[in-house]
Length: 412
Image (tube, rainbow, N blue to C red; front, side, top):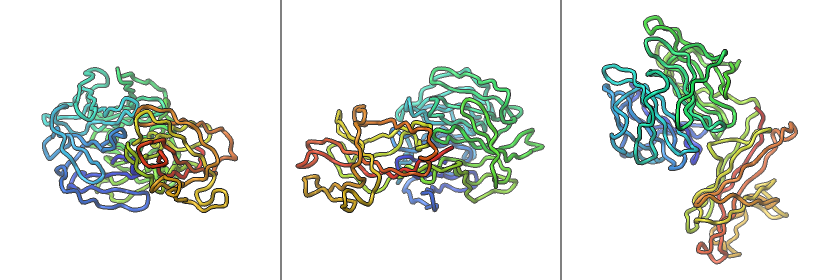
């Protein structure tokens, strides 16, 4: 599974013995998609979301022999990008480095079988091997990107026995993080990133596969490991899928093996949920339809800073970010308010104009960092965002508006 932060859905593909179907979770229900082309049935492949190009990147797996194909899902169809790059493998670890805009891949095993020790990066066009040293070769490890600390975090896996080491990839080299407290050795566990909170790890198997012991513990990593004493924990399992659900601000877990196979969805709640949910639609300009959302799916929690980004805008424009207290009323008038009468053809105001700030221009996108004070009184309160984009060629008024976003401030 992976999290499509542009469309606020979790995407799931295939799995061992599960066929070649593609599903999407919108926070409430699963929907089976109907692509015209699909990857083959794969076991132990990996899929991560490239937020710069807005595609899910799937690599490798077993068919039942190891493959080295790269596929991409754009929300409606699969596209085979080729077989150049890492050698065929399965059980590798993979994550997306959003700061450097590359997919990072480590290890796995080939058909012989040999545990692999190479590290690769994929920029959407070309795979490049970037390291052959670092963690020992292994399979069934997990890796996720910590957006707060700008590191890929790798833990565990299997090489002759279950591993217990923690490593971080900074884009240049691997660094082992030697900690006194960390999860016990395991392989086949699940790990994903909760925006602003850290990497969440669940379950897996420890010991020799001939004498398996399945686990059901939950851990959080943000530079140090802390065990999370979760209530109503999922049953012990291995080789499950897990991803962050941006709609509900929860970690979503699906399937896995408990001896048989599991097919239900389970969610891990933060202590006081935060939300940053798009609504409504923007109006098209010369750079496309401006789209407002959070950077890396981060959510508004007290005592934290979240990034807000605006894409599909003209080069070097100076967007303004609107902060409103309502998405229903502004100055006695109802929202949404059609602004076509002012020359903003097809554009509607979706948030009350209580405050606006300049966003930082970065070419054809812009961003703004919002620091939320550590005030308990803010927990549960709401605000609404929309962006105004100067665009002289868009309409007689010379500007467009983005979609709206409804935010709820939470606490971890």
